[in-house]
Length: 288
Ligand code: PAF
Picture 1: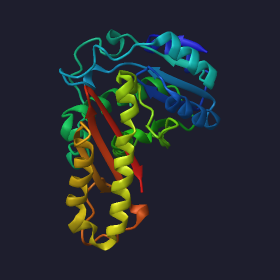
Picture 2 (picture 1 turned 180 degrees about the vertical axis):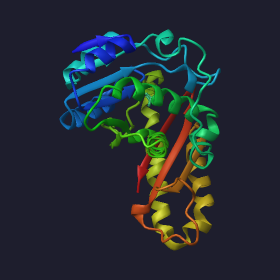
Picture 3 (picture 1 turned 90 degrees about the vertical axis):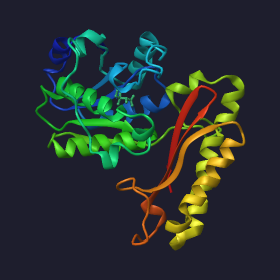
Picture 4 (picture 1 turned 120 degrees about the vertical axis):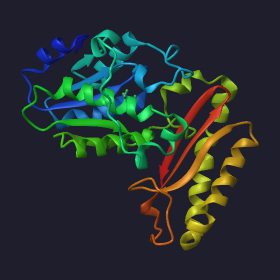
């Protein structure tokens, strides 16, 4: 496996290949990232992962400075998973000057849920992903693949739509969320949890499962009952000491609330949630 730090070296390393498979990350890797690498590997002729903590997607009060940087351990794990090239640019390489051109995703998809609670987050994500795609895919002649985890459900939708709207010849593949034995979705931020918080953390996924059950039981009455069911799910977490941002039932195809005109079926819905436990903000979701 080759580790490169500059765009020039990345392009040189990729030149002999036709069909890159790309897994962008911010490092501090867990089995969810490695599953994406393993899923993607057979699709192309070279597998690339980037490790870059992207300042643009963090608000000033968020954890940019403390986000764990674990390059050595990440490279070991990526090599074991079959990754061929790791691109780990210093900040000055990707942002040699202030990034004034930014990708503005549509507000109907990007200013709700995560975008509502983290304003500007998806502008930062789309801008860096667009830039990373330019670095990774510029030499490609065959099919190009990029993989994103479904744990960041809204993120992979926003990126899929960006690729479609800009007619980028890249196939976006969504990987299933990987979970710990108790059901907690794997996340780089789980490492922030104390032992007590780690034991409690699974409650977010349990609350979402309960909300999914309630949504299905409501069936045709879901549009009228939805807000009350969501409030119940948020209260269930709040009484345990969580600070929920949202627990909600949405249509899978556009993340809007189901309306009276929609035929509500399990396949058409997703439940999504974000909540803070102590100082750690966790997100999770289930396609019902
Ligand atoms: O999901 C992430 O780790 C990041 O948002 C991404 C896609 C690597 C962009 O910085």
